[in-house]
Image 1: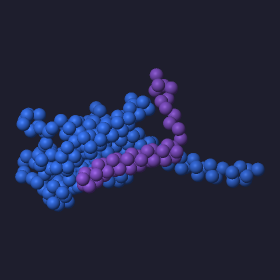
Image 2: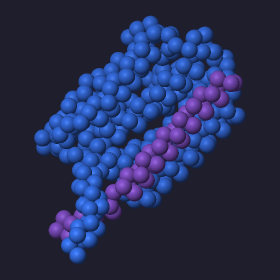
Image 3: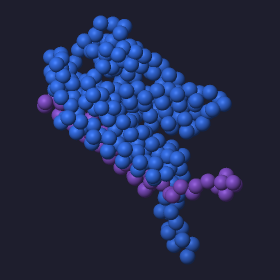
Length: 247
Length: 45
């Protein structure tokens, strides 16, 4: 399915349409709130990128488990884990940057060592380390297995990060909406903006993941075929001399 | 509103740059590798 051009075109079109609608709603339709003024408009981008960073790392953890289990071990799970971790790291970086931009006018500081922010920064650092680990040369199975174990350790930070606002007293606010608490809700324009942000950035996440997975497959092919190709090229360079010498 | 514009710009530009980087890497690898032969006849069955 991921090889079909219509599938990826559909994801790209969905991302463009919903992101455009989210930007229009966030910048022009949504009104300021009493607590945060215009800064509440950042709700359209910040919670979705944070959520998709979790999704990216969650897919990495799931693919790592499937790679570690002997029954389901396939090279593709390791490639998916690597691709998803990189996309997750990009979304995690965007979460940290947009959070910092939101924090400056509302809290008065770009950064503070609050539990939520520290856990998010730690998550970013852990998965950067995971990506660095993938680059260390080793036999395919050895690298796959140690990266899978590292991913499963790194992913333990997700619940700590998510529940940091409930477990500790933090500067970062708790969730803006809670389906179990009807009094904790947003107005319609903010709800629509949040939904459009989730849809648009969700399509973008899926498109990036598919494209990154294809690149991961190509990199894997290049790793195995690259040496043979280089040897062929060297042989081809030497061929005219040999032909000339035999004449 | 400047902080709001900055937040939106960071996300949109960041994702666009990352997408461009992935596409460029994919194109470079496809150029470097011979065409994928696809599944062998015995695998295709």
